[in-house]
Length: 134
Image (cartoon, rainbow, N blue to C red; front, side, top):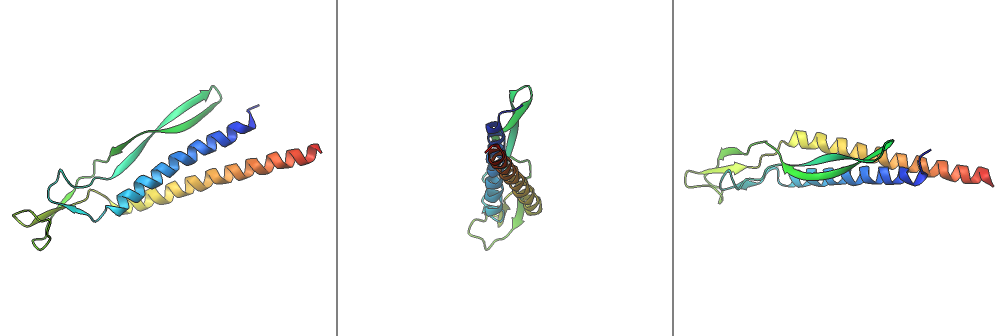
């Protein structure tokens, strides 16, 4: 039987991974409508890359291996009144798909909440076991 403490470690690591996912999504949403002078300077959405961490043959957890830029390309828009516009009157909008980011945020929040529920259930079961042992 697995050590009860491992339940808290597994859920804790999963929550940390989902928190990183929420933070990158929040950063993407904050920069979604930003503009830049050139395509190279334009913001591109960030995405965490998860890696399975095998702790033992019967238990694995998750870690954030790295954070990468997505391949969503910035969009060129004509806006000659914008102070960031190039000499031809164009700006580059951030490479962020706001609908995708909202879906990502909802999914990460739900997975985070699922792990909170796992922790609450584990705590209740441990407390009930202690109460039964008295």
